[in-house]
Image (cartoon, rainbow, N blue to C red; front, side):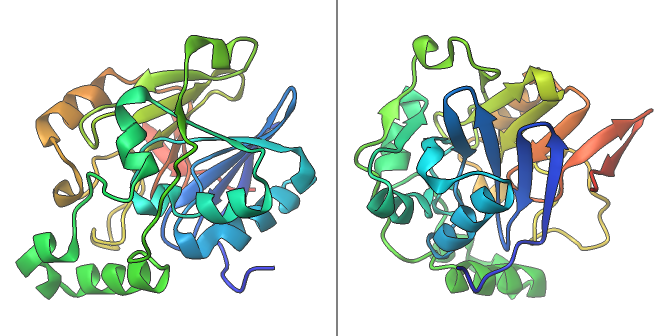
Length: 248
């Protein structure tokens, strides 16, 4: 049982539970042959991720796979702890993202590279939360493999390229749920952004992104159904021309 708590847990559609974690997000997904995760938080989130699988009504023994949006430590950090307990779980990512997922080196900004931006109080608060989530712990997922079209045959999910944030960033469309899981290709809010900003699909703070121009082009090309499940910020759904947080 985790001592950490999510910011929110919402059932956005049958079999789709979105978790806005302490610092980053993940999705618990009921599939035809078991349970899947999309991302898995920071290293300190392992127990919380597993708790949310149970909260979603599943047996942990039914956990089968983790789909990765991208290999930053706040999205893959919980995976090694999951694999220690459930070594049968498969970890799948785009082929161009495998180096980031497997680690220990990855295409990710460091505190030193953030530099003078640390003077901003909200950036300092985010950094403290990240370090408190074991962001500095070396993370490796050597068993991660590249997904293929075969991995999605018969599944209610379609991967979409969302490159730019990292080399192989991927979004996952869930057509039956009218939702898309965007990772950090599109977020609705981030702790480094002003608290007054209303949640809506937006680009993440630029210094987190490897290639901002490519990331913007990729984001514009993504399909946006009624619901957006981001890597940071609350889930939102479209109401007319507005985006509002998903509740319930």
